[in-house]
Every structure is written in C-alpha cells, then in structure tokens.
Amino acid sequence: MSAPLIPISGLAVSNRQEMGKNLAKGGCSSSSCGSSAGPADMDPETWAKVKDHPCYSEEAHHYFARMHVAVSPACNIQCNYCNRKYDCANESRPGVVSERLTPEQAARKVLAVAAEVPQLSVLGIAGPGDAAYDWRKTKATFDLVSQRLPDIKLCLSSNGLALPDHIDEIVAMNIDHVTITINAIDPEIGAQIVPWIFYERKRRTGVEAATILRDRQLQALEMLHERGVLVKVNSVLIPGINDDHLIEVNKAVKARGAFLHNIMPLISDPAHGTHFGLTGQRGPTAAELKKVQDACAGGANLMRHCRQCRADAVGLLGEDRGQDFTLDKLPEEIEDAPEAREAYRAWVAEERKDRQAAAGLAEQAAAAAEAPTLFAVCTRGSGRINLHFGKATEFQIYEADADGISFVGHRRADNYCLGGYGDAERMDEIIKVLDDVPYVLCQMIGNGPRKRLADAGIEAIDSLGEEYIETAIASILQSRRAHRDQAAQGA
Amino acid sequence: MSFRIVESNCTACGACEFECPNAAISYTGGTFVIDPDKCTECAGQYENPQCAEVCPVPETCIPV
Ligand code: SF4
Ligand code: SF4
Image (tube, rainbow over all chains, first blue to last red; front, side, top):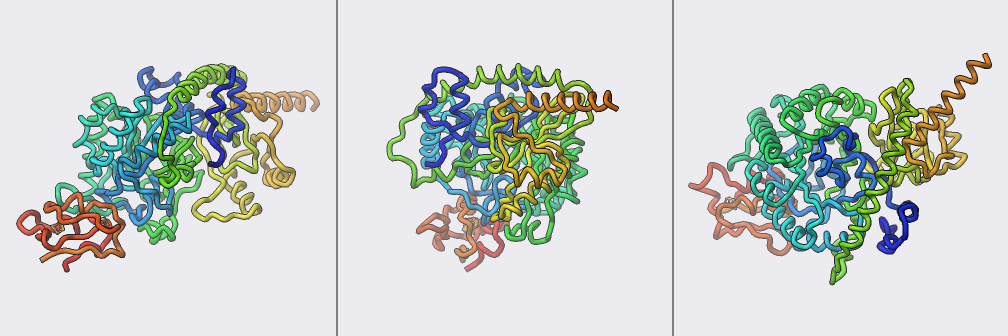
C-alpha cells in the first residue's frame, strides 16, 4: 500500500512534536480548507459539529480525512454537466467510474479504511446517483457502519428533490451534515442547467421541473435546519448561465439556515460527453471563481477549499487513496482500531491549540494595513509549509490584508482533465494559475522552477519550511515592511 | 406487450428497477433485464412506462 496517511505505529510516539514530524513524513498529503470560519466566527454548537469534518471546516481539513462510498447509483434528475455513463462530473472527478458497491461491501470497505487511517472522521455518500433518491441503499450502508463504528460521522449529498421525504430518518440516524446542490433559485435559469426531473411518477421538463426542484430543495433546507441538521449548499458556477445569479442563491440559502455555501467551478470537457461539454460551455477561470466567491462573502459562510473529490475518494482533502482500498484489496478479516483514532484526535486537539496561538500572534503582526497580497502555499497538512514545490499538485491560496491572514481557496496545478503534462507544460500551467499571486511558499524548490517563477514575477520562498502558514506569511510581510522602511530612509 | 432494455446503453444505475410497479426488472447476469411476463408497460397504472420515464439514457427502455 502506498504512502499511508500515518502509520498506526506512528501513534506510539511519545509527544506531540514527534507525532507532528511523523505525520509530515508519513505523507499525510495536501490539506486545504473548508469554511474559512474558525471557532471565532461560528456559534459553539455549529463549531462542535464541524470541527472534525474536513469538508466543512477549513481548519479540520488540515487534520482529518473523509471517505465517500458510491452505493446509490440511481438518480432522479438529469443535469447538463453530468453524463451518467461516468461519474457525476461536478460532484466527483470526471471521466473516472467509481467502484459501485452494495451496502455490505461498502461497510466492509469503511471498516478497512478506519482500521488503517486514524484520521478518518467522516463517511459520506454522494454521487454517482442521488443518495436521497436511492435511499434504501444509503440507509442500509449508514446503519451497517454506525453499528460497527459509532465514532464516525455520517453525511450525505443530494440534489434535494427526494430529501423532504426522509427528514425524520435523517434525524433519527444521527446524520448531522447534509449537502444540497442548488445551482439556481430562478427557474428560468435552473431550466438551463437541469433539463428534466422524475417526480411523482412523471418526467417533468423546463421551468416546471426547475420550479419543483427549487421548491423541494428549499423545503428540505428549511426542514433540516429546523431539526438541527447542518446543511451545506453546493453551487456549480457556470459562466454565462448562473454567475451573476449565485449572489441571489447565496442570499436565499443563507436566509433559510444554510451554514456553508460552496461555490465550485464547472468542469467541462467535450470528452466527458456531457451536454455542457458537447455544446462547448466552458468552466470559469480561477479569477472568475474568486470574483463570484468574493461577491458572496458576507452571505452564508463560503467554503473555498472544496476539491470536488471523487465519489469514492478516501483521504485528506486533495488526496485520494481510494485505489488502495478497492474491494479486491480488502482483507478477509477486519479488526477495527478505535484506539488509534482516539489517540490521533487527542493529538490534534493539542496541536490545534498550538497552531491557533501561533496564527493569532501572526495575525497581530500582519494587521498593519497592507494592500491585499496573495500567497500560494505548498502543504501536506497540519497547517504548515511542508511540501516540496515539485510535489505540489495544488496550492493553497492565502490572502493577507488589513483584516489579517485568511485562506481564500486552492488552485490546482495538475489539470486532471487533460493529464499527461510534461514539466515545462506543468510550469506553464502553474504560472497561469498563479497569475495574480506574487509569492510561493514551499519547503524546497529547485533552481530551474525558481527562475521560471521569477521570470513571471513570482518570488519563491523556501526558507520558512515547517513553519505554520500564518507565521510564515507574517514574517514575510514584516521583512517586506522593514525593507521598504530602510529604502525610504536611505532615499 | 412489454418493454426491454438496450443493454449497450444501460449505465446499470438501477433507477428503473426501483420504479417498476410490477417488479419486472432485475439485475441478472451483470445487467438489468425486463421480464416480459411481468411487464405490463405500466398500462392502467401510470400514464407512461416508469422505466422509460426515469432512465437517464435516451432510447434505452423501449417497447419490444
Ligand atoms: S414498462 Fe412499466 S412494467 Fe414494464 S418494465 Fe417498465 S416500469 Fe416495469
Ligand atoms: S434506468 Fe436505464 S440506465 Fe438505469 S439501469 Fe435502468 S435501463 Fe439501465
């Protein structure tokens, strides 16, 4: 099995520092952030629910792993970005068919992962298909898993159409997070994204379909919110169709209690055979995505760390170990290792306090009003700069401004839709995605790439390896300021 | 009077099995098939054959 997240043996280490080192070594691959909200700007009850959930909390994604199993292939709507022959292109990675599992097989797989990966805190059921429509399989899977692994949180994703029918069961089963994909509030716009739905025994199309879907989605959101279930809303940003409209969506879902709004880019390629792919509908650029996310800031908390992981993804965000746990690789007998997860969680609690204190200090240092500056960070988790530039498949983007230092998104440097990049092309791609970012922070970088970046006006800094991200950014800002002051005096 | 599934189009999502009011559809031999003895084309039950209504792939659940 390749690069375990952290070997179980790593949990026997005597202190926190050592464990942190082991963790970095173990290749607990990239992390990245959920809601940029931390404990400070969330009510305590919500924070308690999301703090160990890597998809929902920007902070948790640095430490915890989630896994998805694909058990519910049937769907009750058609989306123009989906080709059902493959996985749903936006809820999961395009073009790769997930392993389809029966509930019993899925439960075995979860047990195997839990025994091996102490970071595991969440089991999700998303696509392909709709977890709420194919409900019997979703429920059977959750029931089997919660009997054996009561400490694992359960969550599901749905288009919302069938959700209102299952609210009581969702509450009874202790599913405390639900994601609803809502791409439009205005049915005229919705009809351009969803050509048909199957509802009450009939296929319905156009504005009628979009209206029913919208009403059921908002109803589900309200009902879940009322019952204390956290609801995240996903929206796929489709340039020219719903880009301006997503602000309305943001307001509408916030008003009904959504705790997070995740705006993700359309992934579109003719090779996927989707309607949008075939009609040449393009996805947004990183800058377009950020613009819409910025415009929505202040509404429902935005989530900027979503990596659109595959439906059967296993691992920390941005990492997929799913291939290590395909059915044929599962052991016959699976022994759970709950102590390892407990020990890991205890370690994280301590580490978090440390990191928070460091970030707090760093923010104070950075607070002197600055023009907003972006930093691209190479990290494999734990909130530190601990990844070699050449190994980074994505960058975490941090913004420093008068309000402090905050995570604003991640940008991929490996275009998995096209794949097969050579090194030169990879650098072209990196320089393109980092167009508006003057600094790259990494553990190490070769001279060739450093020069290519410099030629593009990007400074690579590898002298701050192993520092907490916020601390490193603060020290760069400080030295930049000192430098400027000196220059001013000299002049 | 029966429907059938065009195997080469089918994604094996199982939605049709789920919706068929007569339990005529089953996953047999690695693919979804309609039992012609059980299929009524949904006559008298629903306006349109349920399998064809829900199937995500056009021209996949069709009359024999
Ligand atoms: S036409 Fe109706 S009865 Fe026949 S297989 Fe389809 S859903 Fe079942
Ligand atoms: S609904 Fe269509 S694609 Fe899905 S299993 Fe039935 S025939 Fe196959």
